[in-house]
Length: 590
Image (cartoon, rainbow, N blue to C red; front, side, top):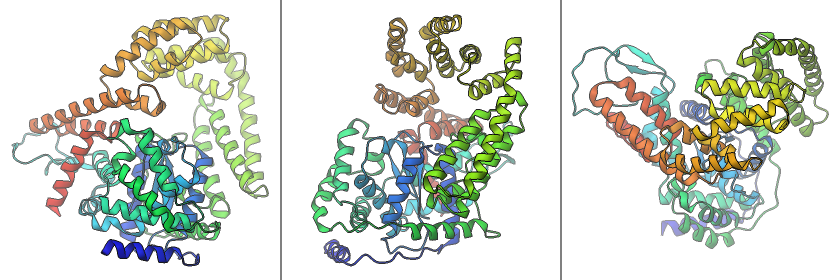
């Protein structure tokens, strides 16, 4: 009866005239700060996806839906992360994430509106308050995230009680040494983001999402189409991604089809004012003296780096929320200046002007598309011209060093980035391939050899690069490197050798990072299913080692294995067992 009453209420709401957007605020500063810390850890673990058009699309649709909601306790943000697994998730403070893998399924605007409306629904209906596990983890997050894990000294003697399970969130209850709290942060974030909701919560969020989509001018049939795509394209990956974190796919497809006639699609209305107000709320928080802000992450932990500078979630979110105006210009210019100054601090021949100029030009193109009369454009153009002049001025000296034959790998990387089309490029690519090969970096060695080979196949450098590829192919262990060679058609011999070795290696590789890198580079590759199967096996093996080292009283090695599982196989059964174990301990303490 209660569900029937709710459905009638939703129908009545859908017939109302579209109203002005509710004014957002931050009603619970402590929870918002903790949620921001989790959001920061998301971009540390997964990185931001560098696709401005798709990010703009997500924010346009997301805010058109958000302004139709009565919810005003937290400002919504919408972020695109570089995760190949199809997924979408939300944090209690209004931070909504969409993965690259979900967009790779080819969702149209109506389907994407269904996804974003669903996630908005989880926040607006405050489902986290009705989930004891998530509530417990938010409390854990406030105490542990980015704070470090206390571990005993490796050689400190102690008595081990086998009846007390090791807690991977905090380590033993004694000892004085501290290490970076990556294990604690990973456990908390993985549980917050990847644990599915109950059937009731998912149904409520689906209904709210369809309602918001219709009010915002999107076809409520998008929810049904979304589930048709999910159930058709990813049945073999049912234990991973969207079907794991948003279960009951077939039932929800039927429910969406039954509900779509409930709401009438309204006229679409831009959300510019709503977005500007959201940005202002976030900017006020960011500038407030004493406001609790996420600590800057270590660049070494981060997949999505920009010139060595760690990604800061909140400024990125503020820029995506409303990408023009004074606040946006300040964020853009500040980011570019950090990148420029970091590069100029390097020795002159190792400065990657090419990467800096690409970022500058991308930002200039974005600004020009948004507002051709922007006051920021002349500044960007002037700084681009200055950097390009420095790049050109350095070329004769770089050629001279190259001819001398004595240089570091960083010089080769910078040269190829700074001067990709000059006559020396094949020679530099060959030398860089040789350098990566000596360092054991097989994937990048193959990439550089292929550049040298394809740029000038009949040249001396091209022939040497081809010889390097033929020497590497029979012994390659990195799946991504093998896939590169198996995908090319210029040399049938290399293709055959690489394909045969890949057939074997996907079932026998022994490093989680190897499989994770393949999935990251080739999310639609022909070997995704066996790579995932092997990844799960390796994660289970590492989990067994975690238990072993806990029993032996070696928490350092245990935490090392925990980090590997959560970094490279966050959706595996082993990761789920680690999260369960941490949550059980947290609930006992709570």
